[in-house]
Image 1 (tube, rainbow, N blue to C red):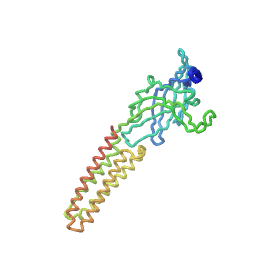
Image 2: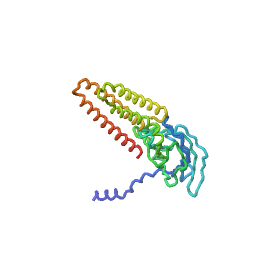
Image 3: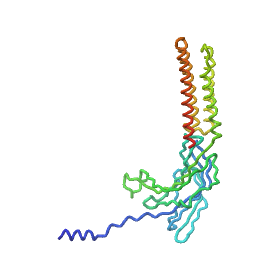
Image 4: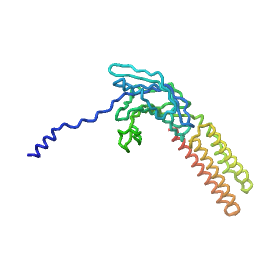
Length: 319
């Protein structure tokens, strides 16, 4: 009987109140210009309007902006207006933003430009953004040095820092979490003329090396000098072409153009090795026939591998 009374009293107690959701502001952005993409310092310049719609004027999100990946920032034309029961604010932002660029497929590379914005005062338990996807966008007249914008989006993520920043309200060892508004522009470059301009010396060197396999005579020693001379010229032209490509300022890591040059270097070095092998075998008249067969096998197989590898690399880059 006592147990029943205790149980009834316990179940009659009110449930603990659910934790109130933090206040929110709807935030959006419209990019008016994108320029100065530079892979050497890994930066891009952007001009855009940023706005927020908040339930109170005191919550105005455009007044507490932390541009996480900004190098330089200028904010102008700030305004705040009450519209119905909400407060609409906006600010124009111009800045230089640090980026991570992947040029492995240059000059058919695709870049993902991100601008990250956080609240400079409130963490995610005190304030959160809501992305205004419907009104956010970009000026379709933007021209960015060979790139075109193939996709655009805005979103909100929660970013965790492995520190409390000294806040005594946060237990030691706990993360600090902040709502982060992200502007994401996906760029695509299609520079066929630039690719031809930088890659054609490598392909010429490849053809020169290919021709060397078919320089033959009954007495191989008589054409040995010509064969080594052609291969040497091919190696030299590839090295000079690689150097010229690096001086353009677009070489960053191993690009598609670099891959083609390196493959051509390897192809030419195989030709040098094959020629040296034939010279070694030529001293024995009984091995000359097998040496010539080896020459043909090496020429056909390495050429096929070179062409297939190039087709795959270029195909992956342009798709």
